[in-house]
Image (tube, rainbow, N blue to C red; front, side, top):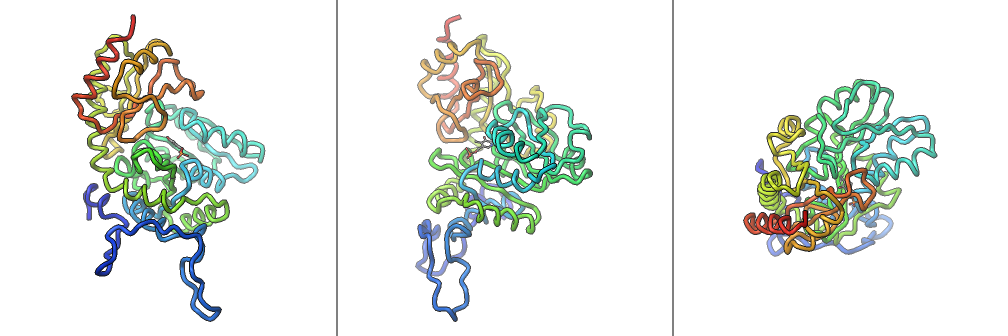
Length: 370
Ligand SMILES: *Cc1c(COP(=O)(O)O)cnc(C)c1O
Protein backbone atom coordinates (compact mmCIF):
# COMPACT_ATOMS: atom_id res chain seq x y z
CA UNK A 1 0.00 0.00 0.00
CA UNK A 2 1.80 3.12 -1.11
CA UNK A 3 -0.76 5.72 -2.19
CA UNK A 4 -1.97 8.30 0.31
CA UNK A 5 -5.63 7.54 -0.26
CA UNK A 6 -5.18 3.79 0.05
CA UNK A 7 -3.19 4.12 3.25
CA UNK A 8 -5.71 6.52 4.78
CA UNK A 9 -8.60 4.20 3.99
CA UNK A 10 -6.98 0.92 5.11
CA UNK A 11 -4.48 2.06 7.76
CA UNK A 12 -4.88 0.44 11.18
CA UNK A 13 -7.64 -1.94 10.07
CA UNK A 14 -6.80 -5.58 10.58
CA UNK A 15 -8.07 -8.42 8.45
CA UNK A 16 -10.86 -9.66 10.66
CA UNK A 17 -12.44 -13.08 10.91
CA UNK A 18 -15.78 -13.83 9.23
CA UNK A 19 -18.58 -11.98 10.96
CA UNK A 20 -16.31 -9.44 12.67
CA UNK A 21 -16.76 -5.72 11.95
CA UNK A 22 -14.56 -4.17 9.26
CA UNK A 23 -13.89 -1.15 11.46
CA UNK A 24 -14.51 -2.29 15.05
CA UNK A 25 -16.18 0.24 17.32
CA UNK A 26 -14.45 1.98 20.21
CA UNK A 27 -13.49 -0.25 23.13
CA UNK A 28 -15.14 1.84 25.83
CA UNK A 29 -13.67 0.02 28.77
CA UNK A 30 -11.37 1.22 31.53
CA UNK A 31 -10.61 -2.25 32.73
CA UNK A 32 -10.11 -5.71 31.19
CA UNK A 33 -10.37 -9.27 32.55
CA UNK A 34 -7.18 -10.17 34.38
CA UNK A 35 -8.02 -13.85 34.82
CA UNK A 36 -6.72 -15.95 37.68
CA UNK A 37 -3.32 -15.48 39.28
CA UNK A 38 -1.77 -18.30 37.22
CA UNK A 39 -3.18 -17.06 33.87
CA UNK A 40 -0.58 -15.45 31.57
CA UNK A 41 -0.91 -11.64 31.62
CA UNK A 42 -2.85 -10.10 28.73
CA UNK A 43 -1.59 -6.97 26.93
CA UNK A 44 -4.70 -4.99 27.86
CA UNK A 45 -5.54 -4.62 31.53
CA UNK A 46 -6.35 -0.89 32.01
CA UNK A 47 -6.98 1.91 29.48
CA UNK A 48 -4.44 4.43 30.79
CA UNK A 49 -1.43 2.42 29.58
CA UNK A 50 -3.13 1.15 26.42
CA UNK A 51 -6.41 0.37 24.71
CA UNK A 52 -7.16 -1.56 21.48
CA UNK A 53 -8.82 1.52 19.90
CA UNK A 54 -5.75 3.73 20.49
CA UNK A 55 -3.59 1.08 18.84
CA UNK A 56 -5.64 1.09 15.64
CA UNK A 57 -5.31 4.86 15.23
CA UNK A 58 -1.63 4.80 16.21
CA UNK A 59 -0.89 2.08 13.70
CA UNK A 60 -2.53 4.10 10.89
CA UNK A 61 -0.80 7.38 11.78
CA UNK A 62 2.55 5.72 12.45
CA UNK A 63 2.49 4.07 9.04
CA UNK A 64 1.78 7.40 7.32
CA UNK A 65 4.56 9.12 9.24
CA UNK A 66 7.17 6.37 9.11
CA UNK A 67 7.56 5.87 12.87
CA UNK A 68 5.97 4.67 16.09
CA UNK A 69 2.95 6.78 17.04
CA UNK A 70 1.55 7.44 20.52
CA UNK A 71 -1.82 9.19 20.71
CA UNK A 72 -2.44 11.85 23.35
CA UNK A 73 -5.50 13.53 24.77
CA UNK A 74 -4.68 16.77 22.88
CA UNK A 75 -2.02 18.41 20.77
CA UNK A 76 -0.80 20.27 23.85
CA UNK A 77 -0.56 17.03 25.84
CA UNK A 78 1.66 15.68 23.03
CA UNK A 79 3.83 18.82 23.04
CA UNK A 80 4.05 18.78 26.84
CA UNK A 81 5.29 15.17 26.80
CA UNK A 82 8.06 16.08 24.34
CA UNK A 83 9.08 19.26 26.18
CA UNK A 84 9.23 17.41 29.51
CA UNK A 85 11.50 14.79 27.98
CA UNK A 86 14.13 17.48 27.45
CA UNK A 87 13.43 19.68 30.48
CA UNK A 88 16.22 18.90 32.94
CA UNK A 89 17.55 21.85 35.00
CA UNK A 90 20.28 23.61 33.01
CA UNK A 91 18.98 22.28 29.68
CA UNK A 92 18.16 24.60 26.78
CA UNK A 93 15.10 24.18 24.56
CA UNK A 94 14.63 26.03 21.27
CA UNK A 95 11.05 26.99 20.36
CA UNK A 96 9.55 28.94 17.45
CA UNK A 97 8.76 32.53 18.49
CA UNK A 98 5.89 32.57 15.98
CA UNK A 99 4.48 29.08 16.49
CA UNK A 100 1.46 27.84 18.42
CA UNK A 101 1.41 30.22 21.41
CA UNK A 102 0.39 27.77 24.16
CA UNK A 103 3.66 25.85 23.69
CA UNK A 104 5.54 29.05 24.62
CA UNK A 105 3.21 29.72 27.56
CA UNK A 106 3.86 26.19 28.86
CA UNK A 107 7.62 26.59 28.49
CA UNK A 108 7.71 30.02 30.16
CA UNK A 109 5.32 29.22 33.00
CA UNK A 110 6.41 25.67 33.84
CA UNK A 111 9.89 24.98 32.44
CA UNK A 112 11.72 28.27 33.10
CA UNK A 113 10.99 27.99 36.87
CA UNK A 114 12.63 24.53 36.79
CA UNK A 115 15.86 26.06 35.48
CA UNK A 116 15.36 25.35 31.78
CA UNK A 117 16.61 27.95 29.31
CA UNK A 118 14.07 28.74 26.57
CA UNK A 119 15.39 30.19 23.30
CA UNK A 120 12.81 31.57 20.88
CA UNK A 121 13.59 31.77 17.18
CA UNK A 122 11.45 32.98 14.28
CA UNK A 123 10.52 30.10 11.99
CA UNK A 124 11.78 31.89 8.88
CA UNK A 125 14.70 33.46 10.77
CA UNK A 126 18.40 32.69 10.74
CA UNK A 127 19.01 29.23 12.18
CA UNK A 128 22.69 29.69 12.91
CA UNK A 129 24.76 27.34 15.02
CA UNK A 130 24.64 29.49 18.20
CA UNK A 131 20.88 29.00 18.42
CA UNK A 132 21.01 25.22 18.55
CA UNK A 133 24.38 25.00 20.32
CA UNK A 134 24.06 23.14 23.64
CA UNK A 135 20.31 22.66 23.23
CA UNK A 136 18.69 19.39 24.32
CA UNK A 137 15.63 19.87 22.10
CA UNK A 138 14.77 21.94 19.05
CA UNK A 139 11.06 22.19 18.31
CA UNK A 140 10.14 23.45 14.85
CA UNK A 141 6.71 24.29 13.54
CA UNK A 142 6.50 24.38 9.77
CA UNK A 143 4.31 25.70 8.25
CA UNK A 144 3.85 27.78 11.38
CA UNK A 145 0.49 28.65 12.86
CA UNK A 146 -0.74 31.30 12.16
CA UNK A 147 1.99 32.93 10.06
CA UNK A 148 2.50 30.04 7.59
CA UNK A 149 6.24 30.60 7.62
CA UNK A 150 8.42 27.60 6.88
CA UNK A 151 11.91 26.47 7.75
CA UNK A 152 14.18 23.87 6.21
CA UNK A 153 13.71 20.78 8.42
CA UNK A 154 16.65 18.89 6.96
CA UNK A 155 19.10 21.79 7.36
CA UNK A 156 18.05 22.58 10.96
CA UNK A 157 18.05 18.89 11.92
CA UNK A 158 21.63 18.49 10.68
CA UNK A 159 22.82 21.46 12.74
CA UNK A 160 20.87 20.44 15.82
CA UNK A 161 22.05 16.83 15.65
CA UNK A 162 25.65 17.97 15.32
CA UNK A 163 25.21 19.62 18.74
CA UNK A 164 23.47 16.57 20.20
CA UNK A 165 19.91 17.97 20.32
CA UNK A 166 16.72 16.07 19.61
CA UNK A 167 14.61 17.58 16.83
CA UNK A 168 10.82 17.62 16.98
CA UNK A 169 8.52 19.07 14.32
CA UNK A 170 4.97 20.25 14.97
CA UNK A 171 3.32 18.86 11.84
CA UNK A 172 -0.25 19.98 12.61
CA UNK A 173 -0.75 22.26 9.62
CA UNK A 174 0.86 19.95 7.05
CA UNK A 175 -0.62 16.63 8.34
CA UNK A 176 1.27 13.34 7.75
CA UNK A 177 0.21 13.46 4.09
CA UNK A 178 1.61 16.95 3.58
CA UNK A 179 5.00 16.40 5.14
CA UNK A 180 7.09 13.57 6.59
CA UNK A 181 9.46 15.21 9.07
CA UNK A 182 11.00 11.88 10.17
CA UNK A 183 12.15 11.22 6.60
CA UNK A 184 13.65 14.74 6.56
CA UNK A 185 15.81 14.01 9.61
CA UNK A 186 13.60 14.88 12.59
CA UNK A 187 13.49 12.53 15.59
CA UNK A 188 9.91 13.30 16.62
CA UNK A 189 6.69 14.57 15.13
CA UNK A 190 4.13 16.23 17.38
CA UNK A 191 0.70 17.26 16.18
CA UNK A 192 -2.75 18.36 17.11
CA UNK A 193 -5.12 15.85 15.52
CA UNK A 194 -7.95 18.17 16.52
CA UNK A 195 -7.30 19.91 13.20
CA UNK A 196 -7.20 18.34 9.72
CA UNK A 197 -6.20 14.83 10.76
CA UNK A 198 -9.45 14.03 12.58
CA UNK A 199 -10.93 16.72 10.41
CA UNK A 200 -14.52 17.11 11.58
CA UNK A 201 -14.16 19.52 14.49
CA UNK A 202 -15.59 16.96 16.90
CA UNK A 203 -12.57 15.81 18.93
CA UNK A 204 -9.58 17.23 20.78
CA UNK A 205 -6.64 14.87 20.25
CA UNK A 206 -2.91 14.79 19.53
CA UNK A 207 0.00 12.46 18.90
CA UNK A 208 3.76 12.05 19.01
CA UNK A 209 5.53 9.86 16.46
CA UNK A 210 9.13 8.79 17.02
CA UNK A 211 11.58 7.38 14.49
CA UNK A 212 13.43 5.40 17.18
CA UNK A 213 11.30 2.74 18.93
CA UNK A 214 13.23 3.30 22.19
CA UNK A 215 12.32 6.98 22.15
CA UNK A 216 8.73 5.94 21.36
CA UNK A 217 8.74 3.73 24.48
CA UNK A 218 9.84 6.72 26.57
CA UNK A 219 7.02 8.82 25.10
CA UNK A 220 4.47 6.13 25.83
CA UNK A 221 5.78 5.71 29.39
CA UNK A 222 5.45 9.49 29.83
CA UNK A 223 1.84 9.28 28.63
CA UNK A 224 1.07 6.51 31.12
CA UNK A 225 2.68 8.47 33.98
CA UNK A 226 1.00 11.78 33.19
CA UNK A 227 -2.33 10.21 32.27
CA UNK A 228 -2.69 12.31 29.09
CA UNK A 229 -4.45 9.46 27.27
CA UNK A 230 -7.10 9.93 24.60
CA UNK A 231 -10.62 8.71 25.19
CA UNK A 232 -11.35 5.59 23.10
CA UNK A 233 -14.34 7.38 21.52
CA UNK A 234 -12.10 10.27 20.42
CA UNK A 235 -9.46 7.89 19.07
CA UNK A 236 -12.12 6.03 17.12
CA UNK A 237 -13.61 9.23 15.66
CA UNK A 238 -10.14 10.40 14.64
CA UNK A 239 -9.43 7.07 12.95
CA UNK A 240 -12.71 7.28 11.08
CA UNK A 241 -11.90 10.87 10.07
CA UNK A 242 -8.41 9.89 8.91
CA UNK A 243 -10.01 7.65 6.27
CA UNK A 244 -10.99 10.72 4.23
CA UNK A 245 -7.91 12.88 4.93
CA UNK A 246 -6.61 12.43 1.39
CA UNK A 247 -9.95 13.48 -0.12
CA UNK A 248 -10.47 16.38 2.27
CA UNK A 249 -6.96 17.78 1.80
CA UNK A 250 -7.39 17.68 -1.96
CA UNK A 251 -10.56 19.80 -1.86
CA UNK A 252 -9.24 22.09 0.87
CA UNK A 253 -6.02 22.75 -1.02
CA UNK A 254 -7.94 23.43 -4.25
CA UNK A 255 -10.15 25.87 -2.37
CA UNK A 256 -7.22 27.55 -0.60
CA UNK A 257 -5.39 27.97 -3.90
CA UNK A 258 -8.41 29.53 -5.60
CA UNK A 259 -9.03 31.82 -2.62
CA UNK A 260 -5.38 32.85 -2.36
CA UNK A 261 -5.38 33.86 -6.05
CA UNK A 262 -8.68 35.73 -5.74
CA UNK A 263 -7.67 37.50 -2.51
CA UNK A 264 -4.38 38.69 -3.97
CA UNK A 265 -6.19 40.95 -6.43
CA UNK A 266 -8.80 42.34 -4.01
CA UNK A 267 -8.23 45.98 -2.93
CA UNK A 268 -9.37 45.38 0.68
CA UNK A 269 -6.78 42.63 1.21
CA UNK A 270 -3.05 42.69 1.80
CA UNK A 271 -0.31 40.20 2.63
CA UNK A 272 -1.95 37.00 1.35
CA UNK A 273 0.15 34.02 2.41
CA UNK A 274 -0.27 30.43 1.24
CA UNK A 275 2.91 28.36 0.90
CA UNK A 276 1.70 26.85 -2.38
CA UNK A 277 1.72 30.17 -4.29
CA UNK A 278 4.93 30.29 -6.35
CA UNK A 279 5.62 33.91 -5.33
CA UNK A 280 5.02 33.22 -1.62
CA UNK A 281 8.18 33.73 0.50
CA UNK A 282 7.70 30.18 1.88
CA UNK A 283 7.36 28.53 -1.53
CA UNK A 284 11.01 27.64 -2.22
CA UNK A 285 11.55 25.67 0.99
CA UNK A 286 7.96 24.42 1.25
CA UNK A 287 7.92 22.95 -2.26
CA UNK A 288 11.21 21.17 -1.53
CA UNK A 289 10.10 19.44 1.67
CA UNK A 290 6.30 19.26 1.52
CA UNK A 291 4.50 16.53 -0.38
CA UNK A 292 1.28 18.45 -0.97
CA UNK A 293 -0.53 21.64 0.05
CA UNK A 294 -3.41 22.12 2.46
CA UNK A 295 -6.30 24.47 3.15
CA UNK A 296 -4.77 26.94 5.60
CA UNK A 297 -4.00 30.49 4.40
CA UNK A 298 -3.82 33.93 5.91
CA UNK A 299 -4.48 37.49 4.79
CA UNK A 300 -4.87 40.91 6.35
CA UNK A 301 -7.72 43.42 6.26
CA UNK A 302 -7.18 47.00 7.40
CA UNK A 303 -8.80 46.74 10.83
CA UNK A 304 -10.68 44.62 13.33
CA UNK A 305 -13.85 46.42 12.18
CA UNK A 306 -13.29 45.37 8.58
CA UNK A 307 -12.88 41.76 9.74
CA UNK A 308 -16.26 42.13 11.44
CA UNK A 309 -17.86 43.49 8.25
CA UNK A 310 -16.36 40.67 6.18
CA UNK A 311 -17.55 37.94 8.57
CA UNK A 312 -21.02 39.45 8.87
CA UNK A 313 -21.38 39.62 5.07
CA UNK A 314 -20.18 36.06 4.36
CA UNK A 315 -22.69 33.22 4.31
CA UNK A 316 -20.18 30.39 4.19
CA UNK A 317 -17.20 31.50 6.30
CA UNK A 318 -17.79 30.65 9.96
CA UNK A 319 -16.07 32.76 12.59
CA UNK A 320 -14.34 30.09 14.67
CA UNK A 321 -10.93 29.10 15.90
CA UNK A 322 -9.15 25.82 15.10
CA UNK A 323 -8.79 24.72 11.46
CA UNK A 324 -8.80 21.78 9.08
CA UNK A 325 -12.53 21.04 9.35
CA UNK A 326 -15.19 20.50 6.70
CA UNK A 327 -16.56 24.04 6.91
CA UNK A 328 -14.49 27.09 6.00
CA UNK A 329 -13.58 29.00 9.16
CA UNK A 330 -11.86 32.31 9.82
CA UNK A 331 -10.00 33.27 12.97
CA UNK A 332 -8.82 36.82 13.75
CA UNK A 333 -5.62 35.83 15.50
CA UNK A 334 -4.92 39.04 17.40
CA UNK A 335 -7.81 38.23 19.74
CA UNK A 336 -5.75 35.31 21.11
CA UNK A 337 -2.69 37.43 21.76
CA UNK A 338 -0.64 36.44 18.69
CA UNK A 339 1.75 39.28 17.80
CA UNK A 340 0.01 40.02 14.47
CA UNK A 341 -1.91 42.99 12.98
CA UNK A 342 -5.53 43.36 14.24
CA UNK A 343 -6.90 42.62 10.76
CA UNK A 344 -4.98 39.36 10.22
CA UNK A 345 -7.26 36.41 9.46
CA UNK A 346 -6.15 32.79 9.41
CA UNK A 347 -8.60 31.13 7.07
CA UNK A 348 -9.13 27.40 6.92
CA UNK A 349 -10.62 26.49 3.55
CA UNK A 350 -13.21 23.76 3.96
CA UNK A 351 -14.73 21.25 1.55
CA UNK A 352 -17.36 23.50 -0.04
CA UNK A 353 -17.54 23.76 -3.82
CA UNK A 354 -14.74 26.02 -4.99
CA UNK A 355 -16.94 28.37 -7.02
CA UNK A 356 -19.39 28.81 -4.15
CA UNK A 357 -16.63 29.63 -1.73
CA UNK A 358 -14.73 32.09 -3.93
CA UNK A 359 -17.99 33.81 -4.87
CA UNK A 360 -19.02 34.10 -1.22
CA UNK A 361 -15.65 35.39 0.00
CA UNK A 362 -15.23 37.95 -2.78
CA UNK A 363 -18.83 39.09 -2.34
CA UNK A 364 -18.29 39.59 1.40
CA UNK A 365 -15.05 41.52 0.81
CA UNK A 366 -16.87 43.78 -1.66
CA UNK A 367 -19.28 44.74 1.12
CA UNK A 368 -16.47 46.16 3.30
CA UNK A 369 -16.77 49.95 3.58
CA UNK A 370 -13.61 51.67 2.38
C1 LIG B 1 -4.01 23.54 17.75
C2 LIG B 1 -2.54 23.40 17.73
C3 LIG B 1 -1.85 22.83 18.82
C4 LIG B 1 -2.56 22.42 20.08
O1 LIG B 1 -3.41 21.35 19.88
P1 LIG B 1 -4.71 21.01 20.81
O2 LIG B 1 -5.23 19.78 20.19
O3 LIG B 1 -5.61 22.19 20.74
O4 LIG B 1 -4.16 20.81 22.20
C5 LIG B 1 -0.49 22.66 18.70
N1 LIG B 1 0.19 23.06 17.62
C6 LIG B 1 -0.42 23.63 16.57
C7 LIG B 1 0.37 24.05 15.39
C8 LIG B 1 -1.80 23.82 16.60
O5 LIG B 1 -2.41 24.40 15.55
